[in-house]
Length: 340
Image (tube, rainbow, N blue to C red; front, side, top):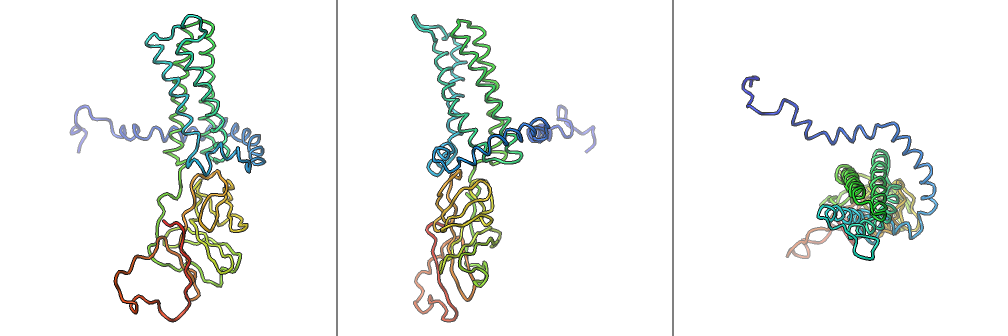
């Protein structure tokens, strides 16, 4: 088609592409900001050693949400200050920000104060989650936190103006706070939905749907741990006596390879953020992980350790002779308590 055939009012070539990729370009530029990189390194140098010293504390795991909540507490708590402060703006617009007789706070001010209280918990849990992020995610997460702190500071200034009886400045600061907080929320949305931060990395893993050879039995002595790939799925194997355990090798929290972690008493540690999982059933022994590891059934047959991602299908009404396992070789099967 020639340029004269272009419909009137159609966007210029490449225009649609820029409209749909501006956010990707924006965040790519953000992660290259030198000052943000330097600040991230400085903050991490101060904060991460403190977190490492206390990561085993139950209070720290509760700040993440840990094995009990099923997801980060920060995501749920963040709705509270946003909701309170949005309501404050609505009351301001409706003229419902007049103090009742004998009160120092108008209804909008009360919601502003409630939002600040909720923001304290939101900031604390967000900072805790930030300590278990890495690379570009950590830099963007730092920017997200700084923007939220700026929004909180503006909201605190708005509340102070309300208490002082300065209605118009209070309203202007409240709107500014909401604008900055909304922008911070957009950055947070990019981390979760654009970068898959704090999502279950093994939620959709499945297969193989048949028994597959993983490793020769002789190559997995007692106490050994190894990572293998079976039909595209990464699996960690560990042998404890006559038992062989198999989990998804990718940590559900951030995708670290469990096969590179240490195993103590059938509990494996993720080398990335030190989540602990029980190899026998995949349950979380210690966070920051929120989701257990998928378990694969294993068996030893004819000198090979075999795994599968699901239990064998029922054989229906076949005769006992037809369903019997071959006499040759040796088969020892371990069923998984949960499978994908």
